[in-house]
Amino acid sequence: MTVIALSGVHRRVPVAVGACLVSFTAFWVAQRIAHVSMVDLMVYRAEGATVRAGGDLYALRTTAFHLPATYPPFAALLFTPLTLLDTGLLRTLATAGNLALLVVFVRLSLKLVGHARVASVWWVAAAAVWCEPVWTTLRYGQVNLALAVLVLWDLSRRSPGAADRWAGAGLGLAAAVKLTPALFAVFLAATGVVAALRGGDGGPWLRHARGAAAAFAGATLLAAAVLPYDSWRFWTRMVLSTGRVGHVEETANQALRGVLARLLHSPDPGALWAVTAALVGLAGLAVAVAAELRGHRCWAVAVCAVTALLVCPVSWSHHWVWCVPVVLLLWTRGHRAVAVGTLLVFCSYALWWVPHVHGRPELHQNGAELTLSALYACVGLAFLVLAGHRCRDPADVKP
Image (cartoon, rainbow, N blue to C red; front, side, top):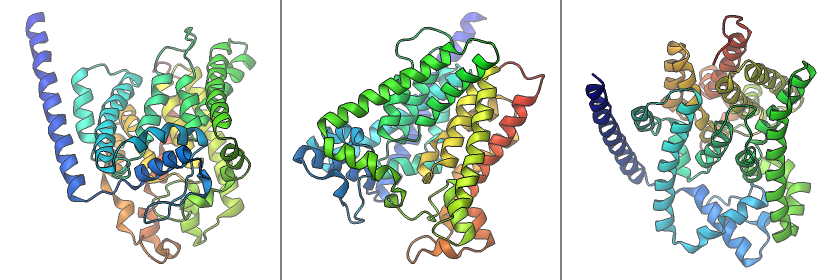
């Protein structure tokens, strides 16, 4: 019987790999037919060229859309090798690299939820590549999958309390490239403090948070040493200039701030957003900490990711690649109807069904359009409510 079982496993894995390769090939062809520009990748390349030329990084405007540099200076340092490749080869390698990162991301997501079947990695990746956040990440040549892999690699390496000198390195580097992942370090620190206040040992979480802070500080200081002027400008001015990344009300902005801007028909939701983001941020962190202290690392990580996406001033739709571990978590924990519904939302491309091109039409949306352009945020809020309810269930004590 064991031999037959092993034979079945050996057959399932090649079939799954083949199906994934077919899906990826079809995806690649579809992106070529769509003439994707990978515009963000071109911005990254221009940032690297500006660094090499000694130019003013945050005065940069590039591509036909006159896009600026918006990431911390450390990211620009990492982008300098992109200038060594011509744009055609760069687009090809970036697409191939993102597809490989998707497989790694799925593998780490399945590891997070406790699902170890190798064949599942390939089946899930074959389907996940078609969901809107992943499609758009590859369409723009974005770094979302790379940052998500760093975060999950860091948080799924060892169980809490295990000694690991690399703990925090992935989180710190991800936050040095793009600030949003810093919330994971806040979550770890908060967990350590709460554990200590309850009379337990908060040391493992606090050490992990310190490791993330050290990695972030090291990367940021390196950038400051190489790019002192750009670093000064970013950390004293640009870090607060959220308007540089685009109009807040754009349908692609699936953060709470974007939803409120469209709902209020105003480009600046002001104090209402600040209060809402603070409340959701505190509630999300509370749920994540409670889940972590109960041993639910998978729920804690997913909740923290969704909370970060909701409270960030701008969370473009492609930032929501975290829908992959969220759907897997819901499915493996018995919430299968919710998982299917969530999957359908992220595969529907519904936010692009509303007018969104010229004249800032998102400021004049009707009820149906407001609903369609708020789906990701609504799903995120519903997930936080479900996670909070799950963590309060006294019968639910194991991940």
